[in-house]
Image (cartoon, rainbow, N blue to C red; front, top):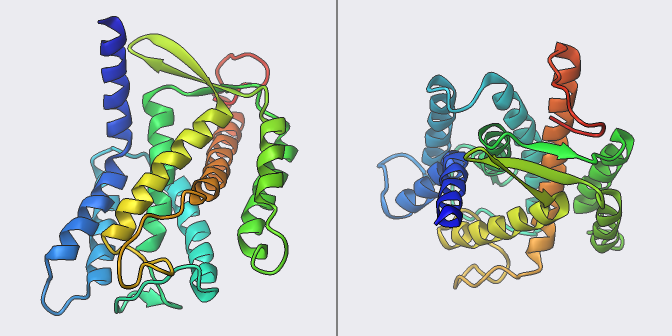
Length: 266
């Protein structure tokens, strides 16, 4: 019974951390079947996302610091979207005033929702990471991962090399989290993979609801190739590294860093 109770509490914390992604999914579902006269679907989604983001801050579901982190992901996501759509990796077939370079601006919120989940999980479950690699290594590997999303269209795809390097660099890195007063631990690379897998599931739901379309899905929806999990795995790595490094920097500047074992990122 104790295990079931802890698992239930863990599920509740995860659900609360997913408030923003759930809002986006609900919006995609509703706007697929409900139209607002004179307002394109993509524009309506953007308006709802903006109102949701404001509401998250106003009702203190997200802090101002978390909003700053989320805004960073908006920029990262939109840059990637503009490039990938230009290269034909996927498309947004519907019309909308809020489309720039073929990319609706609401797409940045889908990347921001990943950051929102990470930030909220970090706060709600009191995440601590031990065995964190040298900052130089994490910055270099995240930069290489992000660059590979662009360069693999022209040169060899280094994703599997980067994945191997990740397991080496983060071999000793462990994430600690609390559930009802009990501390659990998990290899950080395993958490990368699990989050990436669930984002892949979310991606299938999103494409089914018409958030975007991959080649081959224009006429009939089909399951997103399972190989995309590797892409989300690498994107989650960048997300966690950015959040962890910003938290590390904030604690250092603010002088509020708690006592923790060497190599811990609060």
